[in-house]
Length: 446
Image (cartoon, rainbow, N blue to C red):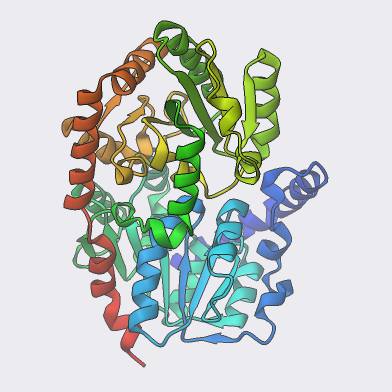
């Protein structure tokens, strides 16, 4: 029965292939982000990095995007420091791939490539070039053909920092007649919480193979993933010393307009300082769109890349009427630096229905965090933040205004939130080490 199901799964993918291929060609011609690396994802054998780079008995770690790459950094360092095995690191998105290439550019023991599509020929191709001792998926990436082929080759499969969104969970349940065979091939699942442990068990993973180890995002290593952050932070603090700083991170369409209007209202209501609004769009392809949108409003806007290359201090701090100045964060990987200098942070993807983004990053620097109601991807973290009063959840632009006003102009409220956030981070550290301990047997065996 299982063989028949995988056969029909591959027939289904084969039927979709012509439409899929045409769509990717069109995306490529229009320079759509979905086309990034698609040729190597479809035909992994063409990737030049595999030439003269045989990877036998290495550890294959898959981190789908930038957030998962960042979450895996401490874990990867534990492997590098305690095992002789090479690291094979894959990512799906261009931002994740580019970040990893830059982070590990001088590391000969780490090979970075685009994760293949789950077409039978693509997966078979990649496994001709690499024969890992262990495959590790960060969070939850379930690929039937890959898991099936790894299982046939007796290559263990682990999912760490494991979670499943409600939407994905329902989809897996609806097609459980097929996916139960896929989930049974997973050897180890290291979950963020009890809630996810129950979900994986109900989907077919053997209960004895599931453990709760916490969230690796609490272990974020700022120094490793953001080189020279202190020097850059010090420079920005000097430049923007004469105003309040709002960091709007990972914003989506619709959120930039909202946060800009709120910043303008704040500068008019509280005439003590300028408002410096740092906007970091979630998707790099929107940098120009956001820049042009702000510029058309007549509000002063600068690019962070320009700020780093010049000294704007004399311009910003001349006496004048209170105003709002926008700095577009147009450099991937610089959001942490911005969080480190802000007075309050808003994390985007939460006022629009996108599931939210990493709410912990501002807390690492003792900064209060504000987010909307759409945080499906970070529900438990969002609950912890609100329960510990490390930040605020808001439901409207009016509530977002009130929250920002509180943290920007109430020193006590800001200090309490910052202190609580640091304590929250400290209490939950250690997931990377725990995950490494559970998988150490795979890392040391021949």
